[in-house]
Length: 254
Image (tube, rainbow, N blue to C red; front, side, top):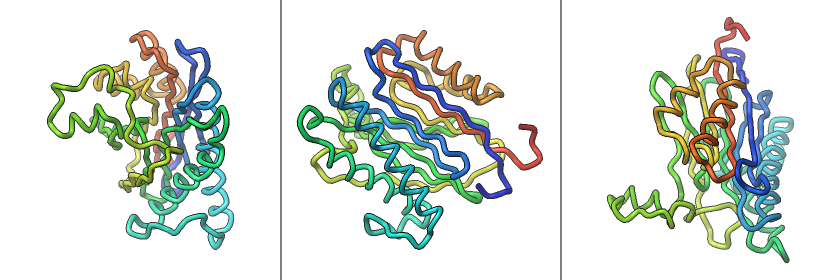
């Protein structure tokens, strides 16, 4: 992380009302790298897929950080800039790894992938699926667009036909046979920014205002736990995961 900023971060993931936890978290503050993956595909498949996603993203970013001249597994997407290209390649590497594991009882597995990379005064986001990134900077802003049937209907102006059966129907996911593009976004960073990465088990159970209020709790660990607890109390039936990252100036108290 560039010395002009410091990070405080915390992550919590709970099984909730499910029988096993298919979410996976990645927190590597020394790399400025954070991710949430929400697996799908049966009892074992989802947790295998999400674990493979965060492992692939971590391995690639850490390898390039240690050796900037290292070989990339895919052609860099230059139009999104160096940070965006790095995350794009990391997510596509995750897709390759999950596809390689899709055999036998794991043949139907897949996962979302939502990752952020912080360096200098920039934040890069790489995103596939319906896990989300929010930024609290005075007001709360959603920085990712869901890749789901329900979200596509809302964006097309057909929200009146959005029904419960479309809530978990993804239009893009890691490991699926169809080709896809990684959504990449690069944003400026400011001291005082709060970031929230979360699975749909969290955002689906809380209002926008509730997310903003709880994300503003001073200690990131307390904020993450309160978000989890509120989502569970709000009736979430899924695994619930939250990563909270606070951007601080070097003179801030830890």
